[in-house]
Amino acid sequence: MGAVMVAGVGVLSLISGMLGLGVAFAAVPFLAFFLPDLVNQVQPLSLVLNGVTALFATFGFARSGFVDWRRAGWLAAVTTLSAPVGAYLAQSVPQLWLWYLYLASVLFLAYRLFRPVSARPGNEHFALALALAVPISVLSGLLGVGPGFLLMPTLVLLGFEVKSAAGINALAVTPPSFSALVPHLATARVDMGLALPMVLTGAAASFAGARLTSVYLPGARVKQLFGVLIVVMTVYKIVSIL
Picture 1 (cartoon, rainbow, N blue to C red):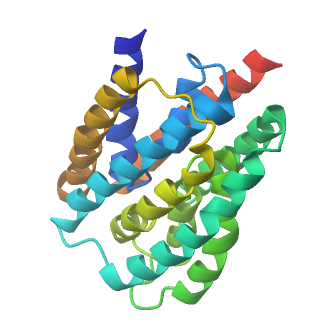
Picture 2 (cartoon, one colour):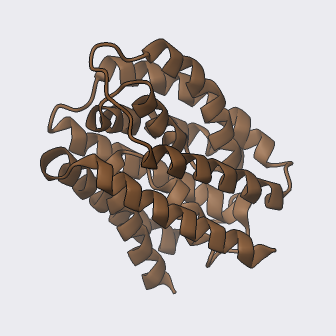
């Protein structure tokens, strides 16, 4: 089982690294196949994985010049302060409600990934992105997935070119992944013997994914395939717990 979990996290980290998302929103339904406790097992491990994979994806995009450090820094400050609010709320919200909320969020993500949006270099709505980062981060903290899975399509919708949005997103979601972890520390139950190889594999795979996108691959088709993958996994998990 451990080898399957590590391999699965590696594949998901490679794909999520292509979009600078951090792996948590894919890792949550995947790890829930093996770990029964969403709040105390799945969410803490997913947040650690999200922070590490987003950080290494940042390195990958930065090598090709796709990280706007100033804008990413402002977004990181907003998301880091907002994400713990949702994480504290997760301690008192029923797990089934969290899964339904997660499914609704993923369906929105898939919808945005499939719709064509024109980039507007130099005319992006960054102020609106900062404002929307607050509710996005609270929601992501509640779900234990990090804000990247909603922030990335939001940036694209607001006019950022896909690769630039991915680079900004990767840095912006790294610190809130760890700040959202703080409320879980007292109750988290994580097997370090399993978590360490997952983290190492996820780091290497996310860096490779970011390099693939920034150097070789167009973003449109990868976004669509990733949207299908996550919706299928999440719908399966929701059906399995009903």
